[in-house]
Image 1 (spheres, rainbow, N blue to C red):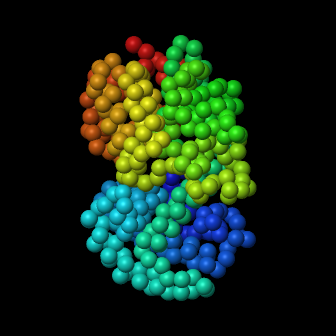
Image 2: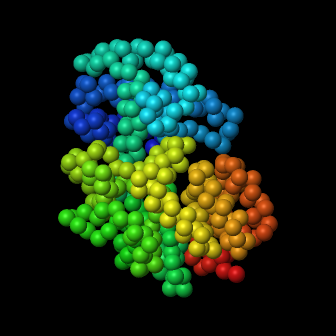
Image 3: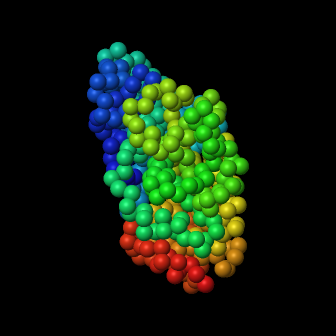
Length: 369
């Protein structure tokens, strides 16, 4: 699947992007490139490049930290919400927004090829939509291979000596679901059995897990869709269907969380509160946590992990990463500060390999007493 850096590189260029009549941004559809829609893309990419310049300057003193699409989404959201003042207000953003308003006057007021002047609020909202849509487009495509999940993830799920296996992912794609289905493994993801051709959200399903496998998507998914206030999931085999009609998305966009620091603010909203309360509850029942592909950059998730490690000295976390020094240098807050102490007590163990190079037997050796 696409990496964070690859997605970030695409956004400021607008290359092969079109904006459709429903307001959604798509890739590789030049036939939809009307003059007005092209102008929105031009404005959006200029705006994102301006935000990226601001972010790059801020992170310049941290060589290991580079601006990502999550940062761009976060900044655009902060500006949009500062103009609307609905959910989250940040007085410190006001001066920056005012500066942008003046700086971007030509962009906001110029009328080109039937495009009309827009406000900073509208421009920021378009940028938010643009980032979200392109992320969904790229993460909804067919993965090159699922084989790399066999040796560790699927082997762990098929281990009969473990009563309950919970897979927690911050990824928006459906790679894990596809791998489980391919292996013939059933799982509980919070959606009830099909009704009228759709599986609707029902948090009680998370507690059933008759198969022993639970899947928690802490940041939502490209196939979580809104049907007039009711959340439903589109099965993984249809997620890659790029020709699905727009009517499939009644409110336009899948339900997922994007943005560096604004995601945790949404953890208590709607179905995400169900997912994160289940995450907290299941962590309390577990004694082993295996981590791979997570950079310890989400302060909400980090807090859960730290609380779990402090709650019982028998709890063990195994981190899989080929370059642990690089991982810890970019990790946030207390996780980075406390990791040495946890390693000394044996609660933190590191396997210096990439995920696809590790077998389940290696991990079991680390977590078994």
